Image (cartoon, rainbow, N blue to C red; front, side):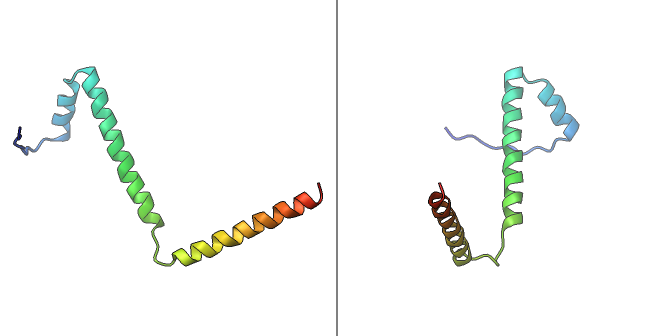
Length: 82
């Protein structure tokens, strides 16, 4: 079954009044949808803020290997004295 879409312009106050008329269950569902959308927007902004062209996969790999080596050497050192 195909449905037609309608576009209408409503003010914030009109939308608020419509929401007030919804049953509690539908208000809760709408609230969850709005929260999900807000989280998606915030996550996208956060990811965008961390995006950089200066950090390469090679740089990340080298740093990971350096830390792994430090951890490994630290464990060997602590094992020698326990």
